[in-house]
Amino acid sequence: MNMNYTAEELAFRDEVRAFLDEKLPADIAAKVKGFRKMTKEDHQRWQKILTEQGWYASHWPEEYGGVKWTPVQKHIWDEESCAYGVPRTIPFGVNMVAPVIIKFGTEEQKQHYLPKILSGEHWWCQGYSEPGAGSDLASLKTRAVREGDHYIVNGQKTWTTLGQHANMIFCLVRTNTEVKAQEGISFLLIDMDTPGISVRPIITLDGEHEVNEVFFQDVKVPVENLVGEEDKGWTYAKYLLTYERTGLAGIGLSKAALTHLKQLASRRQKNGKPLLEDPTFGQRIAQVEIDLMAATISNLRIIAAVEGGGVPGAESSMLKVKGTEIRQSINDLARRAIGPYAVPFVEEEMSLDYEGEFLSDENASPLAAQYFNNRKLSIFGGSNEIQKNIVSKMILGL
Ligand SMILES: Cc1cc2nc3c(=O)[nH]c(=O)nc-3n(C[C@H](O)[C@H](O)[C@H](O)COP(=O)(O)OP(=O)(O)OC[C@H]3O[C@@H](n4cnc5c(N)ncnc54)[C@H](O)[C@@H]3O)c2cc1C
Image 1 (cartoon, helix red, strand yellow):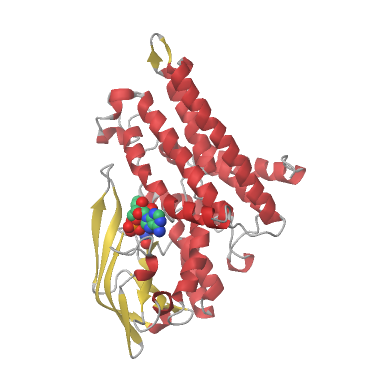
Image 2 (tube, helix red, strand yellow; image 1 turned 45 degrees about the vertical axis):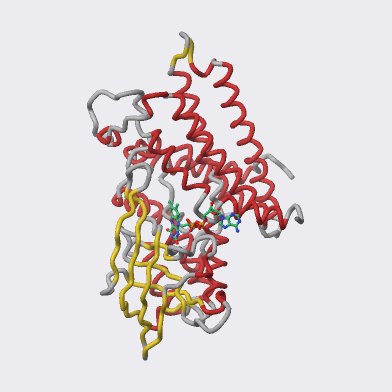
C-alpha cells in the first residue's frame, strides 16, 4: 500500500483548501471549532454552499447531481473539512435514504425526492428504532395495513435524531405478521405533516433536545411512498445501514479534537507548569494519539482495499469500535483538563455572541456537555457490543 498522495490527490487537496478558505463562513467554523450550538439555519446555509459547489452529494451517481470522488478524495475531504471546522453533514437524507432511493426506488421517486434532498427542501429523519427494537431491530412493531391505495400506520418510533426539524421520515414498518420477523417489514417514506403524527422531545444527559419520540396514529400514507416491494424492507434497511456505518469512525473529527485537547492542556497549569508537561496527563494524551494513528492507518488500509475493488466488511465494525472509543477518550481527557470547571454548565457561553466572562477557558465551556453527549457514539449506528460480535465472528472466526 502506498501511503503517499499522488500529484492528482495533492492537487485535489489544494482545491479543497482553496474552496474552504473562500467559502466556509467564519461564524459557522467558529461554532464548530468551539463546539457551540449549531442552528437549523446554519446547517441549511452551509448545505446550500456545498450544493452550489457540487460537493454535497459526494457519493451519488453524477446523473443525480453527485460527484465521482475516489475513496482517497473522500478521505482528504474528511480530514480537511474537520480541520477547517466544517459542520458535520446531517446524514439522514443525503447519506442514508438517498442511496436506498437510488438503488431500489422508482423513477418517479428518484425524480421527486433527490432534487429536494439536494436543495434542502426536505429535511429527513430516520424511523428505525422503537422501544423494544434497537439492536434487535427486526422485532419492530409499528404496523402498516394496506387499505386501498393507502397504508394506515400505527405505532411509535424513538431516538429520532433531529426529528423536530424534519419534514420527512423514512420508516421501517411491519406489513406482515404471519412470516419470519425479517420477512414482514416494509420501507415507507412519510411526510411528517400528515395528520396523526406527533413528535415529543427526549432531553439527553447534556440537557439538549437532539432526539425525539415519534407517534403514529392512523396515519394515511399513499402506496406510492413504498420503496421497492412490500415485505422486502429488511433488505433495503440493511443496505442503508452499510452507508450509516461508513464514516462513523470519525478519524478527522478525532484529529481536530486532539489538536484542541493539546491546546487546552498547554494553557491549563498544574503545579506551575502546563498540564501538557504533566507526565501522567501527557502519557494519556500520547496513548490516545498512538491509538488514533493506528486507526488512521487501518482506515487507509480499508480505503486502499476499496480502491482495489474490495468491499469493506467486518473491518468497518472494528474501525467503528476503535474510532468511537478514541473520540470518547479525547472527550474524557478534555473534561479532565478543566477539572471542576467542567461541572457547572453556563448556557449563555454556548452562544458565539456571549460577551461575559468565561467560567473557565473560552473554548472549554461546552466540554462536559460534549462528553455526556458523545456517550451516544458507542450506542448508535449499531452498538459497539454488536460490532464486537461481528468482529469476533467474521475476523476471529469464533
Ligand atoms: C443519541 C442517539 C441517537 C439515535 N438516533 C436514532 C435515529 O435517528 N433513528 C433511529 O432509528 N435510531 C436512533 N438511535 C437508536 C440506536 O440505533 C439504538 O439506540 C441502538 O441500536 C441500540 O438499541 P437500544 O437503545 O434499544 O439498546 P438495546 O438493543 O436494548 O441494547 C442495550 C444494551 O445491550 C447490548 N446488547 C444488545 N444486544 C446484544 C447482543 N446480541 N450481544 C451483546 N450485547 C448486546 C447493547 O450493546 C446495549 O449495550 C439513536 C440512539 C441514540 C443514543
